[in-house]
Length: 577
Image (cartoon, rainbow, N blue to C red; front, top):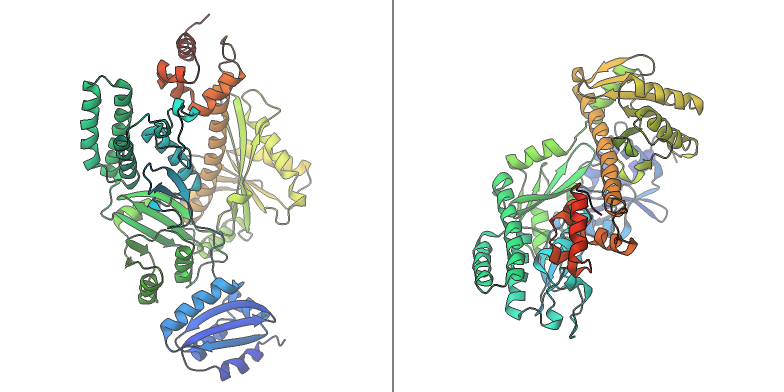
């Protein structure tokens, strides 16, 4: 192949000046598929970018031919391009990498509805809510719905005389054994739908009527359930009053210099944020990502918002109407509340600007990979370390690592850091892409530990930085002290990486504390064996939840009243026998 790519000009000269789809190919592989109103002019545009755009250079370098398919109109080219990209998955087209839609919660359309999780809108007959980001939020919310509204956990609904264990755990109202009337059960399902949608104000009044009815009939257990439901719905109302948006539901696609974020608005509230896992850096192919997102079965809301102008806006709306049977409003203007949320929660780092400033300040090029470490503990116990990875402009969560410190059982951040760095640095020689820079949360003391471990393991090419909180100063091993407030792009880069390492370490520390608290703090209480400890942990997760539980509720788990009172006295710090 000629190094000047003149082979491509032969194809471009033959290309038609008509609308259609063009394909860069290498033997049997599709490398890039595009659409154009004038195929010849569009191919010339690609060719003219070879010198300035590394991606264009790679496409031409790896291609052996250019093909095209002429269509009757630009819209037909728009549809054909989307179908061909889905079918052939070209190497250089921007595409979503995850294989399925995001999880949604479904209240099933049955006589006695239950709650399910689905990743494809319409596959289960019922009312859909979501999506929920991240996925664990959907599972947690499903558990909460069972606990608050007692929708059945069994599927399909059996007919029997005795209730299952979930009834005694307070996760189901027992419709299988006629423990609840059909009217009351369906009312609970409607309240659950209101809770999920955010449209709760009308439902709250009906719940107050039920609460009054149960109280007058001395049905205190049922009244307590309704009281908890009212509290949950009132929390939704208060949240809406604080962050309420004029828009009831929307999907917001926010494009930065390197990434695309999805922000989900439901019930006038922002309910989730996720960075979409795409196959390449974003350029002008946002519309393909949006189409692929909805092709995967994700729910299509009333409004779709983007922060950049879409050239094919008219085609996208038409495609949604014809192929997805949805009329949507498409807006390129984001409300102030959403922009404020984005400013607080999304770090848009311009790599071109950051790279130049980084090289000017530190004297070498911005690395493609930076790893950051933080230590977290509670008064010297549950000491853990975190390692987060920044790679090519964004955080790579698949590469994160967390460490339980094994050699230190007292307050000594330096020794704990030494252990974590030694364990991680010893892996660097085996990594295909080891970091060029390590960032440590701390000051000069933490920096010296990093340098010590680096020298001990012979990692001569590795550079160690530390970052001091509040002052936001970067310390380097060659004696530099860089005040980040003087370099705002670097401030945004390093503090976002540091804050993510801190969050990741703190979440692991909290997880260990909660598990230990429930399974180990009760060891000294007579009558609490392994089975009861496991049951308490599975049912309540935290000590606070056990303290809030009534004696009657604990008794349903097989814990006698005297023992439950003994547990609570112990957890409050009182002396027990």
